[in-house]
Image 1 (tube, rainbow, N blue to C red):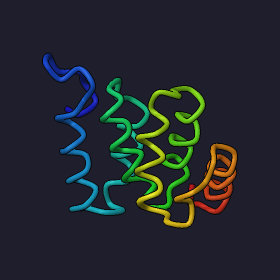
Image 2 (image 1 turned 30 degrees about the vertical axis):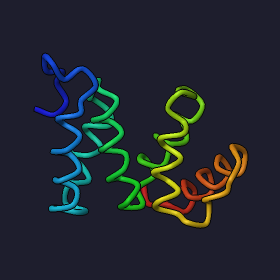
Image 3 (image 1 turned 30 degrees about the horizontal axis):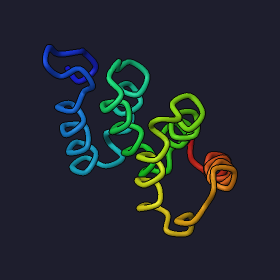
Amino acid sequence: MVTKTEEGNRHGAMQAKVISDMGHEYGAASRPFMKQILNEANEEFARTAAAQQLLLMNDAAGLQFFRTMMDLRPFYYDEMVRWLQGQFPEIRNADRQSMAKFLEGKIRESSQ
């Protein structure tokens, strides 16, 4: 199961690939599973992959994950911002404050 830690896969890189593939293959039908992974997985890569898929579905949970991680895990900030900038070209030159405001606006506009 992708929410369980496997030996030799400390950060969830193996699960992340499966999660991404599932999101691409099943689209919105995978939303409940992505939310479960986001809430239950211990591995950062697995949770991030689920959040990415939810964000692509315009789901508030995925957006909120990115917004929260920007504050809680500053060492992860650059990687998250690069991915977000790939999805939203309008924020390519955004500073931290602008990035936070952008995500907060997207959360308000998103589906729950």
